[in-house]
Length: 271
Image (cartoon, rainbow, N blue to C red):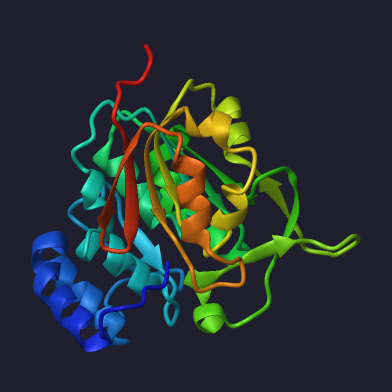
């Protein structure tokens, strides 16, 4: 989820200009004071944040990258590119981090259910906290999205400084402790009880090269809108090429929105 491209001062200035409209005046004041290390609202050690487009308060860990993720989703509104969708029934949030994207989708699409998948235990605990008010509309998994079932481990390394928003996974070695399950998108859909995925959001720090390398044809045909951040600067290789090959036979209109690649099905979903 960590971004490259714009200079940090430019992004800060843009976020500062946007924040009163997206958070409200008081919400913007709280956010920027906390971002500067002046906590005005805290709950059990976590900063408490509000956004106009979120039905419930959210929480962020002081000193973590959570505030940056909040800024991307609720101030810069990176997923507004799909705000026009209607009749959204199932959202699968792959790489859900601390739950901000899931909360955004749950608030924007009040009839939708969300499946949120996150492999990092610390992020996952925050995800559960941030999505608890939505009750049984969301189900979450401490797992990594992969091309097939198995066991994964958090990859050691310094990809984009190795902070909370850039957690990567790898296949676990035999007998390795502290692994998490690997789950594929087809299994998530099948277990959901839904026929189709209205929105498939993927931000998994390069593992998309594995997800789209094999076995994705059947479930891809059941995705109406796919929004993905592709990471070509990882050890997983050329994610953009792998992804382009995987969707080449699908009925998608492909566009760009910031760092996101957006794929919308051009034909109506089968009834």
